[in-house]
Length: 73
Image 1 (cartoon, helix red, strand yellow):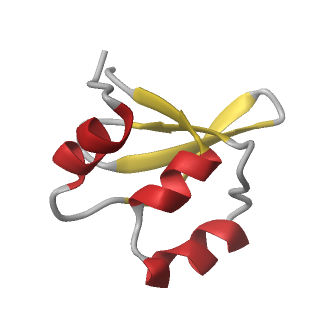
Image 2 (cartoon, helix red, strand yellow):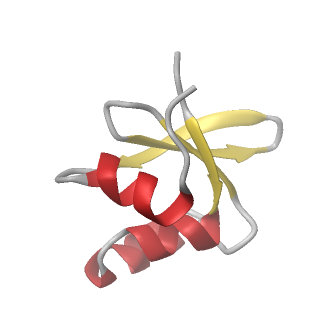
């Protein structure tokens, strides 16, 4: 499966202000290791394993490319 890997700080910049508290409640902080698949599923790496913690909707593909310069690989 293809993913874009980013840190938590980048994810928190990527989402809307109303979503930040939900992500923080799920354990996302600035240093979190995050990956997002092309369907918009957000996963966090904890204790040696990936866990799905949510999803992105809307025009997230272009927001990710614009903010990070990354594409799915």
